[in-house]
Image (tube, rainbow, N blue to C red; front, side, top):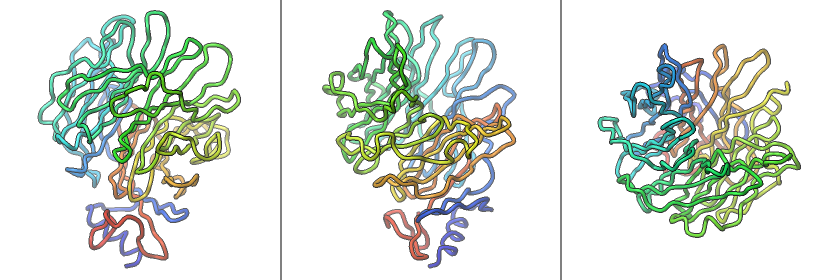
Length: 425
């Protein structure tokens, strides 16, 4: 079958009317499938979308928060089909006069449900982490429960699901009464029961914050990445730890230096796992870069990683920010970011990345380019390479389905587990 026939059949299979744009570099083609998806259009301001994929139902769940008024914000969610069709939307948690924000989400393929975790402003200077279990179709949203309610603030949650043990790991920034800011993690059983807690890393000489986590079932371990911000003069670093599923020994384990570039600032980490390793994506200076890590956590390749995307803001010196990266087995990884352009524009791009070498597999694909500012991006992918990229569009939440295919000598190649009889799937 020719690549053109495969693309046509795949588009028809998904019921999509148009292929808006195609970018090809190396062996991967990348196509935007259909128009922008209006995930949430509302007079109130909506922020910080996050997304997870359900392989059992071949759909995505997008979560975000809405600003309803002064000191009032709520967490919402919407299902999006793998063909880009918007499904039902629902409130995860909404109480007037309370601030619930910055949600994160992971799918539990053992129980066919999601865990949503978010930041709750309990009082002045007191932030907590709440969670709720949501059935796959949103028909039932469980009562919220505290994942951490210690004094001070616990913020910026991220989470990953461990299908081997039917549990989640929620990581977050943790501020102590002493002023120390570090990273902590809480295991949560699939039924919402809190399991063990661990301090991941702390130091009086630096703040640890903005954690991100990925789980590898093949290696039965997590990679937890985060920013290390010196209290005194010095550049920001991206560091991390490899953690066993039960978190045993993680508090005293040495940190992995993912990038420390001689005083230059490295920030905004995002991580993902492959079958035999991990990848960390981050900002360095004004560029987005990535570094691969072996299954034992050993960093691979150049000390400052390898470049992604449109370096230096398409040559204009504007920064790339808000990194996101997802696993797509038939491809490797798919990264996304938002990028500041000349004249104040902010655009979203996506790109396929090899799991086995320091190379990108496709040209940067412009997912959302003006006139509205598109920013604060996240991405989730089906194993066969169909991804949903979500982002803020103005004050609304939007997204696009992007499909990545591997081609070689005019025919589809790659992992045949993700093919149908007619097209890569």
